[in-house]
Image 1: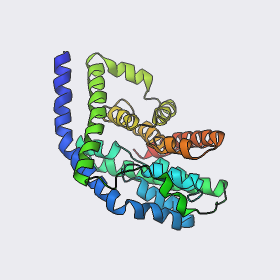
Image 2: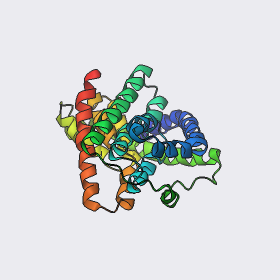
Image 3: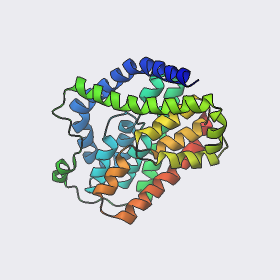
Image 4: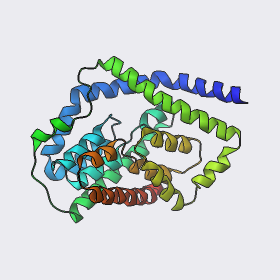
Length: 278
């Protein structure tokens, strides 16, 4: 049984690897040639920040949520823009679903829901918590953590793909083993497919600042353990490295806790509201 699980996991990985590599190669090209322009645009659009942030956030680009967290810490991006990017960030969901052959209609609806969540709640947050701080562009260079300008895009894509594939293989192996041992019941109890409760629990999982959270949530959805509303709630709360950068650069600990709580509440609301469209 264990050998079968290992073989199934490796076969799944071999099927995913080429598509994942091409997806990350495209992301690296975008990040190297358009990433700085995308980030600088956020600082110049003013009230259109949540709109642009929501649109750019759905592109699974490495470190973009972290860059926006730095912008917010430096007084460039509004809180609404920060929330918009955090909620729309798709992280590993898009390339993972593409690699596993998810239906194009489902992918489109998920991306539209992520965009809508960032747009609606981003503007709502800016409306409630009004106020802009002075823009200080010169501070951004000191907060740049991508450290990828000197990398070859082919090599960077390969490294990124290998790292994500490692997470995917571990998660896939554990899920395959769990399902082989009757783990569907376990995951159903851990994240029960019950309205409201599943959104609440999935959003908690999403707050884990790691791609593994989005991988786990996406795999659970693809295996019919959680429904779309729970997936949206979890992915909306999962801002990649954004929260890590926020806590590191924005030196207001309790303020960061409040932002995290706000992200969590809005993510649950997004899952409950937008999950109705599936």
